[in-house]
Structure formats: C-alpha cells, structure tokens
Image (cartoon, rainbow, N blue to C red):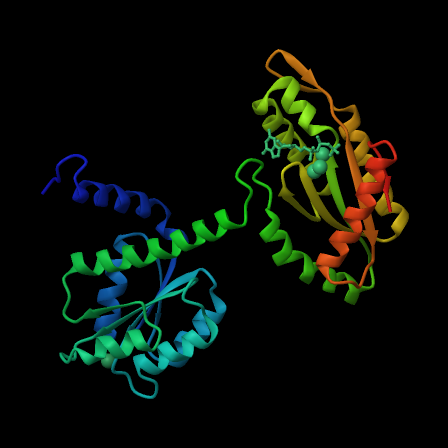
Length: 314
Ligand code: GH3
Ligand code: MG
Ligand code: MG
Ligand code: MG
Ligand code: MG
C-alpha cells in the first residue's frame, strides 16, 4: 500500500529509502548454526544493501568482529552447539560497547524468558522465529538508527556550534592522552592559549554577527596553521592548541607565524573590512596536569596582554 503523505508510515518509508543508500557501508554479521536460517536472514539483509557477514558459530563470529570494524550489528541465533547466543552476546559485550555495536537475538523457542535473557546479557533487541520480513526490517533499521543517533549526539557534544572546532570538552578529553604520547616519544610540544585582542570592540563597532564571522575566520586560520595538532575553542574568543615539533624554536616559530598571519589578515564582512590581532601564552614540554598547564599558559597570555597585546609570551 502507499502511505498517506506526511503520515508516520510515509516518513518511515522515506527513512528506509535514505538508509538503503548508505546501508552498503554498514556491516551486519549473521550467526546461526543452521545454514537455511543463515541464508534466509542474509538474503533479507542483502535486499536492503547491507554488507553481510555470516558465521556458523560463536568462535567464527568473534573472529569476524575483530577483523571487520565496519560490522555495526550482530544478529545471533540462541541455540547453537559449543557457545550459545547468550554466551556469544556476553563475549561480544566484553569487547564491544553498546554505543558502537547492536546485537539482536533470534530464537524459535517460545518461552518469553529468552527475550529477557538476551537483553539482560547485553543484546539490544530480540526476534522470535519465524518472523515476518516487515518486523525484521523494522528492528534492524531501528537499531541501526539508534547507533547513528548516538554518534551524532556524541559528535555534537564535542563540537563548538559556531566554529565547528572541537570544544573545551573535546580538548580535555584528548589533550591529556596526546601529552602522554609526546612524553613517551620524547618530542617537543607546546600548549598555547590564544585570545583575540579587544574583541569586544569588534562586536561594538561592527556588530555581533561580524564578531561571529571573525571567530569563524579564526577557526580557519587555526586549522590552516595547526592542522596536525589539537585545536579547540575553549569559550568566547579564547582558543587552545597543542602541537609537537622536533625543537622548541620551531614550535615558537609556528605559533608566531600564526600570530603574524592573523595580524596581516584582512577580513571582509558586509561593507566593512575587519582587522584584528591575537595575544598568545605558551608553555613547553610540561609534565604538569593539563589544568595546571592551561593555567600557566593563561598567566603567560595575561602578560602578553599587559605588555601591549599582539604578541607571544612564554
Ligand atoms: P582583551 O584584549 O583583553 O582580550 O579584550 P577583549 O575585548 O577581547 O576581551 P573581553 O573579555 O573584555 O571581551 C570578550 C568579548 O567576547 C565579550 C563577549 O561579548 C564576546 N564574545 C564571547 N563569545 C562570543 C561569540 O560567540 N560571538 C560574539 N560575537 N562575541 C562573543
Ligand atoms: Mg540454532
Ligand atoms: Mg577577557
Ligand atoms: Mg580578548
Ligand atoms: Mg578572553
């Protein structure tokens, strides 16, 4: 039947069509000791363009999961020799988070407690055999969409909406690990706090939208100059970077080249041409905790401001 336009069923159909376009990037692993069951489920999935993997036991399933990170869902039978579906679910959950991999349990056994056992052991959903294809597709789509939504929300939580740079939370999540790696490599690195000079004046003179535009331009220059390092908007007109290089002088040169880039940049906005500068506080190769390093860089930034702005202080 053709659902009425803008009805829930119509929206569902639209979602299905959308997913069909990208399903080939999504791997689904079918685990069943019965060949006919494997083929049936695999065929249903292939009709929706998913990339399908099949395993006839838990061991094979674990191997495929290790080998193919594109697998986002496991559809597993309950009754199998050696390792049953519940044990497999448990085993998978030891290594694969619910946020990254969905598990659907399948069983012909009629007692309802199987549904509960699957879910209690880490499965996300359950299907009773024999199932109708329509229900099967609904459950598969729903679970794949849940994963995609989690990814979207996680990404949004780590991204600054205006500049699309990583935000403060992302910086704190990643910087500590990066610093530890720099120390173990014994490379030189620096953390810098960058603050736009007299930014309030930009807003006051050209308007808030112009200020927003300047922040986006800052993000472009940061990406251009420090693309291989960590960059974040910590808040307001304040940014942080964490970069590595073979020696300290090179690091300082890179940071100063960025400062000059900004100084020379001409930013057109509507009828105006905006020019601005930045002050920067840096700290090199510190073993202090991240918060402490940021506070030291912030002190250096304060001296750069005091000393006349548009400059770097260590
Ligand atoms: P200083 O050289 O001492 O850093 O002076 P400043 O004017 O840059 O610093 P101040 O802290 O006095 O002002 C920062 C301004 O940044 C105030 C605030 O309205 C503005 N601001 C913060 N976030 C945003 C934003 O997302 N968009 C815009 N347009 N302005 C913002
Ligand atoms: Mg079986
Ligand atoms: Mg300030
Ligand atoms: Mg400022
Ligand atoms: Mg500031």
